[in-house]
Amino acid sequence: MTKTRSAVAIYARISQDRTGEELGVKRQLADCRAEAERRGWTVADEYVDDDISAYSGKQRPEYERMLADLTDGRRDGVIVWHMDRLHRRPVELERFVEVCTRAGVRDVVTLSGDVDLVNGDGLLMARLLAAVAANESDAKRRRGARKALEIAQSGRPTMGGPRPFGFQDDRIAHHPVEAPVVRQLARRALAGETLTSLANWLQDERITTTQGKEWRTSTVRTMLTNPRMWGMRVHQSQVIGKAVWEPIITLDEGERLCRKLLDPARRTNRSARNYALSGLLECGKCGNRLHSHPRPPYRRYGCLKGPDSRGCGGIYIYAEKLEEFIAEAVLYRLDSPGMHQAITEDPTTPEQVRALGEAIEADTARLDELMEMWTDGELTRAQFRTAQERLSKRLEDNRRAFSRLTHPADAAEYVGRGSELRAKWSTLNLDQQVAIIKSVLRKVTILPATTTGRHGLDPARVVPEWRL
Image (cartoon, rainbow, N blue to C red; front, side, top):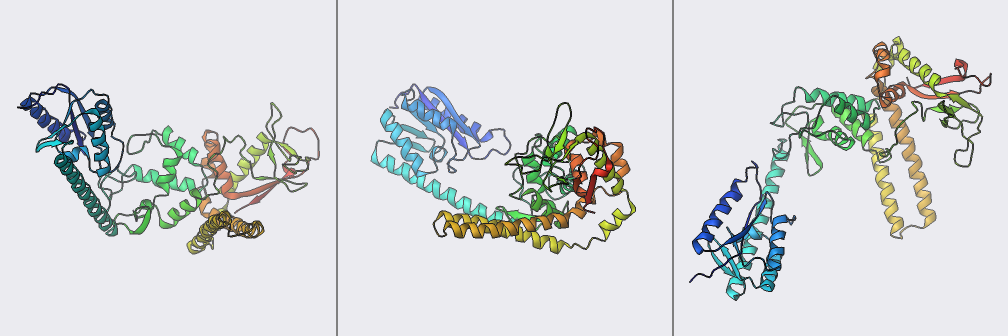
């Protein structure tokens, strides 16, 4: 005679729910309810983990809740469609057995038969089923990995997951609205505009990700440095060849974006910028950099004196008039006849830029290796310091050379647009203004004032050094 159970748990799980309709678990629940009714058992609760694999080791919230209820004695039996819905790893089975044994629960029912966890043969059968399920899952994973590699090697896209921005649902054809946005973002990033500025622009234009979310600096960086954008196929974070789709941006643009946006020296915790010429001004007396040095209600740049700044303290200049003067000079220069010639006759080749980029990457890796060697005691402090200084000097020189070679291409975004940019200058955010200024200006030397206490601007004090 069938034993009466008054507080039975029904558990259902499905690994992948592609439609989100929970049809798989609904069928499992219906069959398990019918089995409970056939036995005359009362179902106390149903525990459902939808779209969660038991083999992956991920947390299964409802499974854990069921174990807690079993531990507390609130359940006196378990009905499950098949044992592999409960476990696909032997280690999880052993935990389940321990919980049931301590709680005195010995009735685990599947639609193919009962499993008595106290009986030796029943426990053996459960262990065999768990081992078979684990082997099946592992074989399925290996087949899936091999298939994914085969697809990647052919250059075809993987169809799972969210649609990549810039492409249509087939992952091959360019999206007519998003692809031009990718090109514009790439040009602006190469011209020096910050990721924060680009993300803000996307939000202002109400352009969302393919999942309808707002852009963040991290997602903009990930998108712009994804080799998919320049027609390369990536598998397990490695480029393995050309893809079947047409690139949205060029290979050269993609490599330059990676150098610029993935450079370890790039600051990612930058505070809000208030001074458009920060980092561009040099003291005409001692050669040190000028820093922001406000004197309310005025903004000023100054050569700061002290143990940290090491300036002379002899040069100060009001910011507003200087920034207006420099901006006008930059915009005028962008429309000058010689600017287009400087851009088109630039002798830099992509090979030169690529070689410098590879050298920067290699030296960055050497610095990491050097640190590991010193940490492991393979180098003395003196040896480490000598090698570090040599590598750091070479790395800095190469970074400067890389920046110098790529700036002509960066400025190409703005050449011939001086009048257009002047008309909307006040509507551009500070990051956009700085990007335009830096595309053609290397630095500005500020000479000593000839008349003290002057709040205006003496152009004779301002000596710009142009990149182009």
